Image 1 (cartoon, protein in one colour):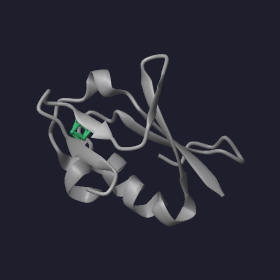
Image 2 (spheres, rainbow, N blue to C red; image 1 turned 180 degrees about the vertical axis):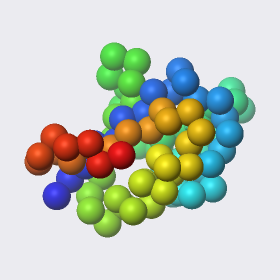
Image 3 (cartoon, helix red, strand yellow; image 1 turned 180 degrees about the horizontal axis):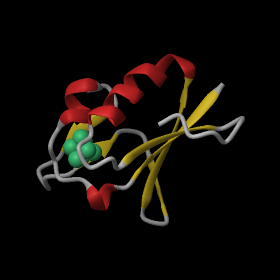
Image 4 (cartoon, rainbow, N blue to C red; image 1 turned 120 degrees about the vertical axis):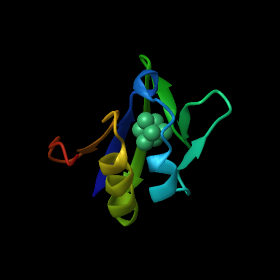
Length: 82
Ligand code: SF4
């Protein structure tokens, strides 16, 4: 199973919760915005495909974000996981 992480960087306020929860994938830049490591920009959104093994930590990052700018979609069912 693979999942698509969608990150709307414009809405990020640099709170850093995602970095605290999942430092392997999130980094706070000097611009005051978080970066989703390994993601690609598509129409202003940043996207990254992850496997099952990364899902729990990515959910924790998404759940910690006070701006709710991180979403996760199951690529098989198209269901929103977060
Ligand atoms: S938790 Fe949300 S608002 Fe905070 S740095 Fe991460 S993406 Fe940005």
